[in-house]
Length: 112
Length: 113
Image 1 (spheres, rainbow over the protein chains, first blue to last red):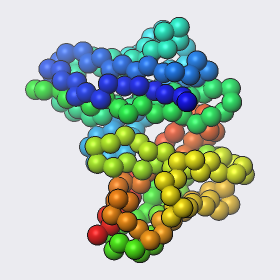
Image 2 (image 1 turned 180 degrees about the horizontal axis):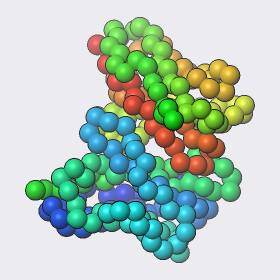
Image 3 (image 1 turned 180 degrees about the vertical axis):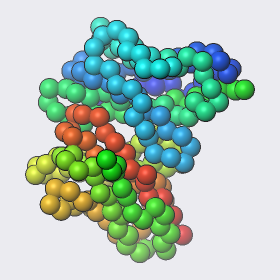
Image 4 (image 1 turned 135 degrees about the vertical axis):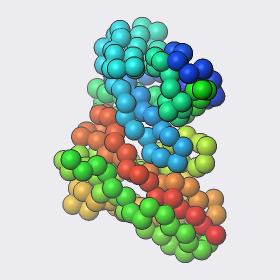
């Protein structure tokens, strides 16, 4: 059974710090990984995707993928209180065309 | 372009009644998914449709739940004889193809009294 694991948190960081969110996955066939942000009472919103080993940067967000270790992370630089949300990691893109597997999410709290 | 839309946004129903929830996916997306999310919990997969293939119903919690997708576009999730434990937010998502990124609708909050 494919699994994507995340620490449920909450992860608490002070405003301006770097928040590091981590995710591990079990299916070595997964080729692409996605980070979603979900504010309380809202639906998940796609914020980053990564297909290749290494880092991918988009503004204050950096996604990191290490396929050998089956590890994905999301770094948020200069964290703001508005970044407080639950972050969902999802894996997919396998050759069998299976749907994404979502982790349970990590709740991030950025304190002013 | 337009995103995934869902209706109604809120639905309050009495225990034992049937409800229908509607999802209109992004135009051109071949895959459509239904999830359920209880307060403070993660996504619970219910069912997905890919093109004209038979739907994957493996996540449906009971035979009171069913879904259909007409013309490869709009989908309706039906819950018969609703129970209080069915109260949750029902999320619909669509993607260009099954293994691609999913885009979520705003959800329908169902409350069974």
